[in-house]
Structure formats: structure tokens, C-alpha cells
Image (cartoon, rainbow, N blue to C red):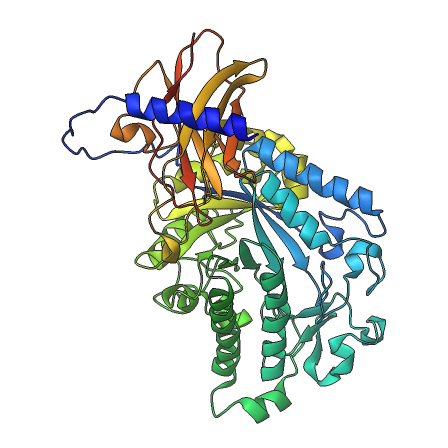
Length: 518
């Protein structure tokens, strides 16, 4: 191995020394192809609650659970996705050996039962092996999908602290108004952040529960104790603000590179309720009904990304996709928060949905619409099972229309900085599987491999978008890295360049090109 590294290093240095010195050209303004972004989140939600996606049912063997997850990941890669959002704390339980909460019942069928392996460690490692970003999805306050507190294991915090729990709408919830509950929730989540190599902490749309007609969320005693003279609604919003800001600070203190994102119901407030609201007539408003001031979280930069669940079609009167995307684009403007859009794969081809969802092109049309709004940095699809179902071939159309080129996930605004130094590309050799490119590099998390036709040196704008990007790969252990380009045409001359990216996807300068032989 040392002899191989030495010969590769010599070849790389000779190539670099032989590169011609080119006089500086006038700086030109590159205009990237907006249909081929270099950075774009392409993700799917993999839900565990009630075994929506993974595991597909309770009681599977370890090997069966692992095989299912690997299949989800391989399908994501084949579709052109670059991230997965995996639910690991669905109901105040855990997909890892947590000192705070019991093993999840959605793994084995029995709450508290050890599944025989560490699902979170496996999930993170397998995602990174495929260069998929891993977003760990937590539900902050939901305790149980029914109201039988005695069905929880005796050591469950909800049984140890029954005063923390509120029954509402056929489910059990932790009471967000209790300071100890918020601290406990942050501590439970931070245990996973500190112990596992996750890339992001992810919340969905559940904070205070969605309103249920004829029922009252019974936090009157808590409000009397902690309300501090605030109106009830303001106090509830303050409680959720405290959770979001506190968790954000904890994550950034422990692991600054770990992102924090939220995927709320897409209507903050209707314009009829608040002139600053969206041009919608939705029956639910997150600010008023879930006590989640999502706009404030963006403006305060407590988040790294927000994913409004714009689960309606273009032209839907009550909540028009084509009106909500511009509204959210304006919300994130001037902040460090990236905007992604959550998509309703679960509505495609469903007879009870509006006619637009019977059109196989509706979702692709939504992504095309997003291209007019540079604030939109990507998309997440709900959920993995619906992506796999691919009804009306809608995801095949998305793949063909939008994911012809690879992309890296976006860099969080607060984490933008200079990328790693350029790799030393040693060779580009034809093999039966394609052109194998090898290079030497240290201190990088991943690499991007570009291919230009002919034996040429890259011009400044050649790498401004993903037009020439043929692949991305996670860094292997040690300095020697490689990538095989299976799309290389035999007999065609190419020039390969490699860039290094850090943990936050900051991209460094490109290597000197390496030429193939015809």
C-alpha cells in the first residue's frame, strides 16, 4: 500500500508540475444552469410511527430490519436522492439505547425490549456509506398513539411523572408548558446528538396537538403556575419558542456542524388573520392552533432549514402551491435559513383528492415552479413507501426531469466557509466498469468528480453548476480515494477533475485535470 501511495503521489505531483501556466483571464460572471444545481436537498421521510415505512412491521428479525433499511437507502440513491430523514423518536421512545426513554415498540412490538442491535448506529453508518446525509427525526411531545398510560413500561417517564402527561384526541402528550418537560425533551434528543454521527436534528409539524373538535388540551393548572400573566396563546407559543431556541443552542454548542430543521404545516397564518400571513384560507394556522411561530424561528435564525409541508397542488384555491412557495421564499430571504419544500406523494392518484393529483406530471411541475425561486434549495418527499409506490410513475418523471445530474446537500447559511484544499488526482484509468479516477486527499468528508469532454483544462464557469458533475462519494479511510464513472463512453477522451468538500458541503478548489487515453 505504501509503494502504491508513493507512486500515485509521484504521478500526481508530476502532472501538477507539468500543468501549463495560463495568464489570468478577465473575471466573467458565471450564470449557472438552474436546472442543474450543484447543491440541492433531495430527500425522503422514512417514518417509523405505526410502522409506516421502517420497520414495515413489528417483530422483524435484526437481519430483516437491516435489509429493509438498506433497500430504502439503495432505492433513494437510485432515484438520485442525497439525504434521508429517519424517524428515531416517534412516541417518547428510542431507536437507540437511550438512558432517558425505553426502546421503541415500533421495533419489536414490545416497548422496552432490546432489538438486538443499535438501529440508529446502523442507520447512520449505512447512510454515510452511500453518501446520504442522515437527518434524525424526533417528535418532541407525543407519548403514545392511545391514552392507556398503563400500557407504557413502568419506567417510562410518563408513568414516573404522570403530572407531565395530558390525554387529548385519543393520544397522550407531554405537557409543553412544564419547564422540566422541555428540559427533558432537549436532554433526550441531545443524547443522540452527542453519541451519534448524525447530520441534522429534524422535527415535523407536531408541537401542541392539532385541534380536536369538542376537546380541550388540559393545561389549565400548568398555566396557572407558569403563565406569568401572559395570555394563554402567547404563553403556549413562548413554551414552544423556548424548546426551539434551547435545542438550537444546545446543538450548536455540542456539535456546531449538526443542523436543526423543522417541517411545519405550511400555513403560518392566513392573510385574513394577519396581513403578514400567506394568501390562503386554511382551516389550521400553526401560529394560532399549534402555537408554533415558525416565522419567528426563521427570523431569529434558530433553524438551519425549514420545510413547509406544501401538501396542495398548483391552483388549489384554499392553499395554492404557487402562492405558498413565493410566500415562504420571502420569509427566508435575508436569513441564514435554507428553504426546502415538503411534497405530498401520499396524495398522488388518490381518488378523493383534487383532479390535479390524477396528473402524473403534477409533482414534477411543482419542482419546475420552484426553479423560479432561488431561495428554494431542495425537496423532501412524504413518505418512503409512497415514493416506492411511484403511482402514475410520478417519481420516475421527477427523476427524469430534475435529477439527471448528482447534487450535494446545501450548506447551512451559518456554516458557509472556504472549502478544503484541492485533491491530487493521480490517474484516470479505463476498467471494465468504466473510468476509475484515483486521488489523494486528507481532511475532507466527501468529494465531487467532474468530467469534461476532450483533453481540456476547466474554464472558470465549467464547474458553476452540475452539468459536468458525474458523481459524489463519501471519503474513505486513509488518503487514497477513488470513484468509477460507469457512464464514460469507450473511446471518448475525457478530462476528470475532483473537488473536496467538508462536513457542511463547502466545496474547495478543483484539482488539476487528469486525462484519459482514447
